[in-house]
Length: 324
Image 1 (spheres, rainbow, N blue to C red):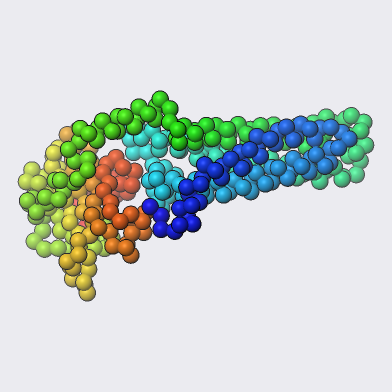
Image 2: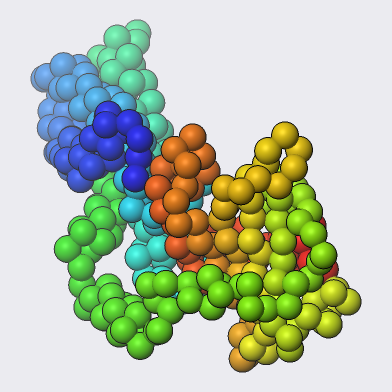
């Protein structure tokens, strides 16, 4: 959820914005070919340059709106610029990575094409060029020039591929439909898909400390950690917990340097049966002034392999000891 209505509008209209530069780039190779006509080479080259310049400039709005859209639908981290793939099952994230890469490659190629067309347009006025053109020499220099045509086709190809992936993400295909069906099936078979049941029952676990302490790694909030009986000894010794063990960190607001009564986010770290680590982040009611920390949401429930928890995994992999 985004706070600004203008930003929401820009993000929502991304599919509309992309059609402007894509349509211009689709017409560009034809405009360049027509410019090869000797009699009207300069005005036709100028037309091709204008099409390329407008297409390249308008692509900036498409790129920005795409980034905002990706953040709005939680495919791109709020503070990031590229989707994170935490699992092979995240088909949309993988597809979005290719979509963005092809778009950026096309943007760079488009800048080169626009520059080539500008040079060709200016070249028409250079001394002796008109004579060479009428003499039929150097065909590759006629009009906008063969190099500009080749680069324009590469530009169209990269953006055409990006557009195809965008269409699949919107309308779906066999792969995305299967991934969605698998995710829905897994959710129905997951007793904790909608509620962090075990994490909410943290008070029944073993306390890892006698009193709350500050945690700079978790927003400098006050926190208290609770661990399952099977993992408390390993946790306090700084060792990896046994499969099935988990730790829950309850956080609280600060009141003049002391723990407050307003609950903050709830964190959970679990060692799965295969030895891998899974994380959970739950914040039932996010204060309005802190919602920017979680992408503007008023309530948050993230579970591994959600890409928004990649930071947790990276931090805990660097240091096996409990985060302070």
